[in-house]
Length: 100
Image (cartoon, rainbow, N blue to C red; front, side, top):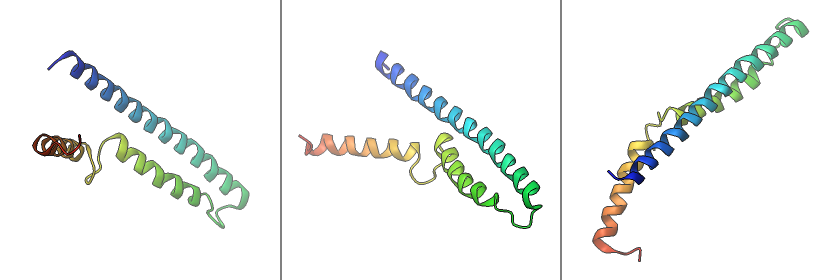
């Protein structure tokens, strides 16, 4: 392992920490805003129509995808898949040199 590998790992870890931090910030914003909208919905028409669920659903779906990305939980195209593909392409490049 050389010096550049250590820097690369540090930068990837730093980016991942930033993504997790962004997710938690979005989660707190989601809870606060949806709670406010639910309160507004209740005091405005006493649950006759729970319209606050529409923004909660839309924003919630986006939050789920953000969490999947932040915590690297994608079962199809996760980090291990990326690493395997990079190694595969590098191996193919050594064999055929078709990229030159």
